[in-house]
Image 1 (tube, rainbow over the protein chains, first blue to last red):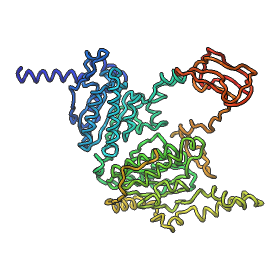
Image 2 (image 1 turned 45 degrees about the vertical axis):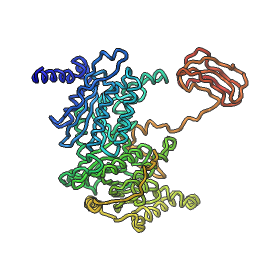
Image 3 (image 1 turned 135 degrees about the horizontal axis):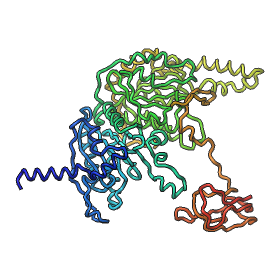
Length: 514
Length: 104
């Protein structure tokens, strides 16, 4: 064969692979409202930046008639490319090829691109759209999953890992996303569960739809398995593109700085907080009031929204924000919000992102369900994560900082580098009402007018303890600051702490309460 | 987060705030099991019933067999007493939580 013929033959082979599972399967994929795997990669990455590897990989299964079946690319597309110029490794399961089922070679392609990402020190993005294990391949398919989980774990805290669920992701397959840092889902397209509706019906006699069991809304509001809820694949890709700009390529780098921008005028920090500590407000307005361009990239917007986490920039530098949200459940800590905060704190610490904590909480959520669900064990995760973190830690106490909540929200005692309090801060062992009822129990009960006495005692306690001055007198608060100067203090603290090095005794790893 | 502000009571103080869907779904009081009332803990098939009304039983006595998920589950009495009423019979398919037997 001449060179020309050989090149022609190659192009023909390539075309077969590029057509995926064939016109009919592609049509079906599109009729389900989904993009094809290849389109997804092209839409997510910078135009023309995608380079595919392992296009001609084939499965080796010789059972159940599989020996006669050709599966282009073995149902997964892998390669490298860029997002806004940032390099990434990527893979996308192709549902049009044998339902995106995971066989051993399919898994080998994934683990190979993951190894590549580790060596290059760049983020890995996995697009999941698969019916699950390729049954014909038996235990080899399970081996494939296990080898992916192993690599997810080794890569954790070394390179950012992003999972995108754009179709079914069921059974063992769910555990790769669960091990990664950020999970994106799309309404009506993503479905995640361990046991599907059919199994639940046979075993428990309970009927439930796929959407109600493991759809995007459930994963984002109830289970907390997914971080980002989006309405369309298009919106999902936009969100991923934005996320990538906030985080570094790997744990040896810092996130790239952006040109600094002032916050927008509409967020007047002194007008956000109501006078009464019992009235709600949206903590995100405070975050926006101190962030560059008033831009706040929220993570887990719908889950455990009594605590807010996300990324902002302050004078161009990425910061991780953790804040109580008085708007929802009065901003209490509970099982879910503790989980949410702890994991995010560890992400920021692993990837050299300074932490800013805004405090305004009445304490922990009371309830039998909370105690039974292990609020002790989950709450301990927050203490662990903050104490463990060695990135710059800056805390601002806005209003209530009561009891265990005060300690947990990155207090001086857990190693905060800077603790600032607004004059409205109330740093106390508990709220004035509760405290007065306990301390002055006898006086209130024996008084001729107990309601009057109770009110007087609450006021006495409020005047004496519901302020930042006692904590400041003990040096637990570094400075009491006017709200309007919050951003200036943050900028200063971040620049002073920019070369912070904190050495800890070496160990294999800690044993966090998870 | 479009719902109205509600009141939430925490340590002597009532806060105005929004509630979440999951908060609404929580179980306020856990179910306490009463050993005198025997319910199906899993849907399945009643294979046999060993007792009838008026029988005296003591803790650990066999009451019935409930087959579920290919397992024959022996249901034993959790208390001492007399069988007040049997609500099921062998061959019956039962749903989760269905009342099977009462002891007094």
